[in-house]
Image (cartoon, rainbow, N blue to C red; front, side):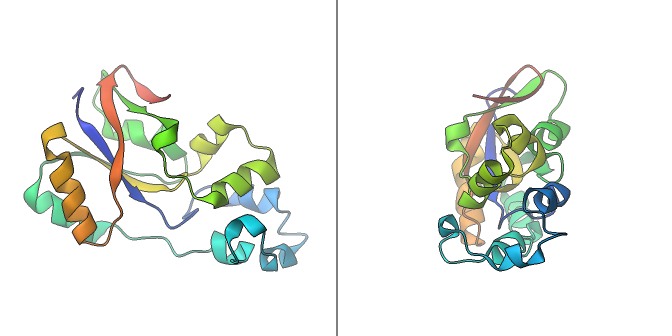
Length: 171
C-alpha cells in the first residue's frame, strides 16, 4: 500500500539479464578475446569476470526476514529489469517510486551503457542495474528487515516507496 518501503538486495552483476544485448555490445561472437580485456572502470577485473559473476541466490536471507517481518511483495529483477518485474509484485493502484540516485549501480552497468550507447530507460528496462531482488515491507518494519538481511549476508538498503499510480516511477 502507499507508504510501504521497497528494499533492495544487491545483485552480483548482470545475472541473467540481457545477455543477448551484452553479446552484441561487445561483439563477443566475433571477438571472444574481448572478454579477456580489463577496462579501467572494472578495477582490475576482466570483462569476462565481471559479466560472469555467479548469480546470487536470495532464498535464505529472504526466508529469514519472512520469519520475523511481514513481507508484502517480492520481485526478482531478471530479464525485463525494473519496468517489467517490480510491477508484478504490486497490487492495482500502486506504483514503485524510486529515486535513480538511490540505486546503487555497479560500474559494470555504466560500461555497458557507454559501450552500447544505451539510453538510461533501456538500461533500467533490460538490466537489474545492481538490484537482484526487491522486498516490500511496511515502513515500520523496514529497519528490522534490513537488519535481518544484513545479518544474513545481504547489503540491503532502502530503494524506494510505494505510491499511488501504476508501474515504476524512476525520478
